[in-house]
Image 1 (cartoon, rainbow, N blue to C red):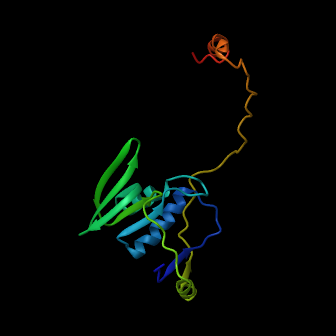
Image 2: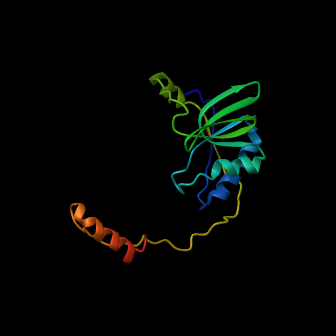
Image 3: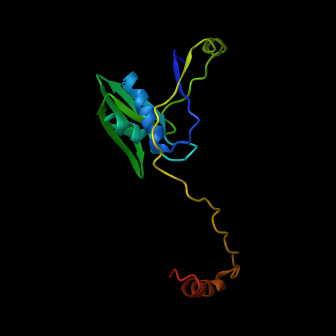
Length: 172
């Protein structure tokens, strides 16, 4: 889809979000890109920390959850979805952008493009060693839920439901 070169940071050590972001930032310093794109969140730790951490390590601005993007004269205008509306943010390059679903429609490569991609170089590099700052000390299944209780099937059950919510559940 238009990529001429790829770099794969390959490492077999266990890393947390901090050490992953630090390794990416160190590699990106050697490239010095104008825009760095990330997805909204990862699927391994299911967090949204990497884009912001990379931006912080590079000392550049970061805009998250971007759904619309325009670029002109080193100025980047990003539109973000927020609760109840949209927010427009302007910044300059270099910048880290984390993309939200809807930012673009993916272009699918042609057969010719797929075949051409096989000849493109993928350079493997060892990322910088960074100590892990988070240690998982325990994991457990969430507690099971209690069985539900049917109080009634019509409007006559309302007083009993209110009593149970007040006396047993203590939510009202």
